[in-house]
Length: 158
Image (cartoon, rainbow, N blue to C red):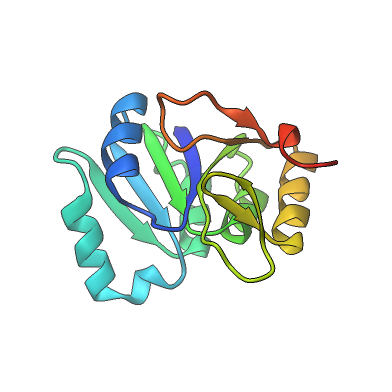
């Protein structure tokens, strides 16, 4: 069962590995990213960052969608982490089980505007976030579990 689907450009780090995993009582972290799956150094780093007793699975987006839809992840309290809003949109489009999306951190890029302390979006990102919402996905901004979530519609000028 998906406990949280999160966009975080850093993927697995202290906030995700410990704060969110503990808050959700997650016993499995799925990193869904097409590039990381082929980067052995990064995968090793991710394995070192994961909390003890928590399973770490790293798959590309297509295989992540297949795994979630097959039901093989249903026995886990699953934390899904993607790197970009685009990846979240692709994952959500392929997985009806994704009902909400946590925006935790996106990288500052040229042509992006800041909508919160750690979220920077382009026009394309905004369009994809609206697509997610149109599919019924609740999108909220929250870096840490101790912070109050902020609904996306409160920071976007719809």
